[in-house]
Length: 234
Image (tube, rainbow, N blue to C red):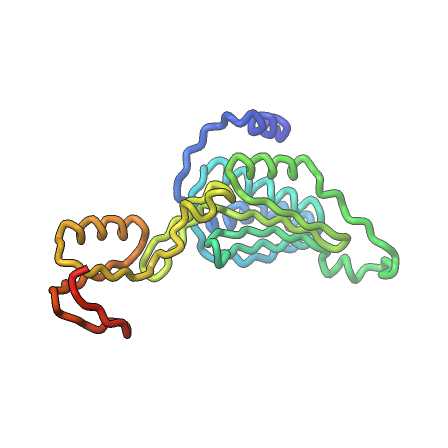
């Protein structure tokens, strides 16, 4: 089944229906579905999953979370799942970190003996790579003898900040700044009596997340705003 999924994704002709989804809810639901299996296998679960919304295909996101949990659970017996927002650009970061459980570190094994890391190049890993590629996510992995971690960065993340909804629409590094709204929430001052111009500027500011202030300025009259003296009709 996993091999068929990888082959289908590799063809690159998968149709996606993107929608706004609660990433935190889907992660918690997937962990709850596996709770009994994890307990039976002696896997300790820790998580910190605050609310984060992303714009992706629901089916692919579900498959990605399943593959990531199966990949991590197949390596070691302590699994930590964290979800957070990257400061800039404002992307959702989902991390799966697997390490040795306390019972493993307190066993009779000689602590001076070298330990070999379990192989994390499983079929699940290649499935994760193909799903992430189809969803246009950034993927990184770190591995050592003590722990392995998988980081998924969601480029299309909904961030609610000061009453504004800012949706990061980056599709790749080339459009990292071209399609984002780095000035959302900033204020723009328009000095003009032209009502038509005011409407046009309002429309532009609305589309970019800017806040517009309009001031009428008559010839020969000066005023002070934010420490700057303005005069005339500009």
